[in-house]
Each structure stands twice: as C-alpha cells, then as structure tokens.
Image (tube, rainbow, N blue to C red; front, side, top):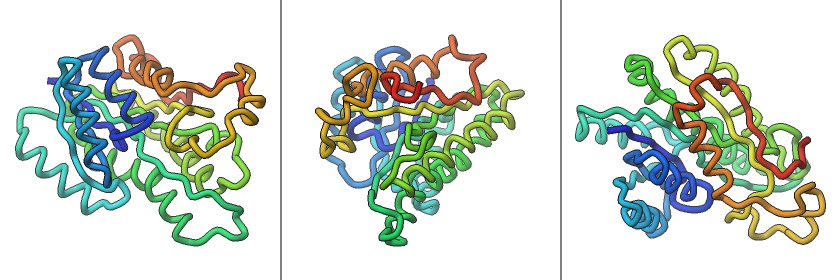
Length: 243
C-alpha cells in the first residue's frame, strides 16, 4: 500500500492536494491537522467519496515531540507499511512590518514551515532511504523566492524550505528519492481570503488568482513515476508573476 502524508491537509491547498493524490494515484492518505478536526474529517469524507482510504493524524508540525509520538504510534499499528510520499504543506502567516514584528510571530511562522519540514521529514526519511523509493514535495511560496514586504518571517521560512529542498535532493538522489518544491503565487485559499483580489490580480500576467486544484495537479505530477528524473527543483505556479 502506497502511503502519503500531507501536512496541513484539512483545508485549502492541503485538502486539494490530498484529494488529487487519491484520485490520480490511489494513495492511502494520512491527513495531518493541528486543530480543526471537523475540517480534517471533511477531507477524509471526500477521500472516501472518491473510493480512497485515509486517516486523520493530529499533531503540530513545529512540535517535534508531538510529531514523534504520533508517528511512532502509527508505525506500531502499521508495521508492514511505510510513508513513501511526504507533502510538507503546513504553513501559517503572521504578516507585519519587520520593525514591529513580535518574536512569537517570527518563531511560529519559521517553526511551522522550516522547523516543520525538519521535524516531519527527518523523522520519516530513514525508512524511505532503506526502501530506496520515495518522494518529498515541499510547498514553498513566491514569497520565498522574491521576498514580500510585510512578510519577512514568511519569506524567510519559505526561503529556508527552498534551500533545504535543493540540499536534501543531492543527499538522497542516489537512493532513488526525489525532493522538489512547488512555489505558488496568489492562490485562492484561507491565506488569501483577506487580500484585495481585484487589485492584486493586476500584478499577475494571467490576470487572476490560481485555484488550489491547479497546484494539486502539479504536486500530483511530481509524485508520479513520470517525474522520477526531476529533483532539486523549485517549480513556480503563479500565472507569470515571477517570469
């Protein structure tokens, strides 16, 4: 059974990615969430409506002890399986000018994206290396490539993920494991609900915000056998804004 763990999978991009992986590949999906159990259960319900299988796993990716506890329990209950696909999607924003930024807003954003990537991937990668088959897909951001004013913390966190993607890809390539990042621009989600879409889409050559499903199709491709020779890449999906 091919198992995929998607962090932050209860809503938005994570939910769309989860459903696409089930629809395209039939993976058994582990739906991670930090607090919104109702949304996670809704994702699971939609997975099952597609004829797929899954389960929800509650842990905060920035808490290593919590990650270890939940994953150890899952491994004991599923001794014959291993998590072959990791989608590090969990992320939060705490926007504000750097001069006024509280330390907690820096730590929470860095902890969820950058430390979360470490906590989840480092905990699971040993078995992937032993099996010599796996794919790690990190959801980065346009912010991590160009930097966005008012998002110094988020830009730093996603920039760290991008650099880690490139380095880790080189470490594990000989074992047949790929590591790639997807860098979305403006995508319709909880994170962009409060933005002025009418004004901001003028910055986008495609003249619109992207849909979560469009990102999910790209992630699904990177998880497929067709992408076996793609690794260490950061693929933009932003309607041309960073072209």
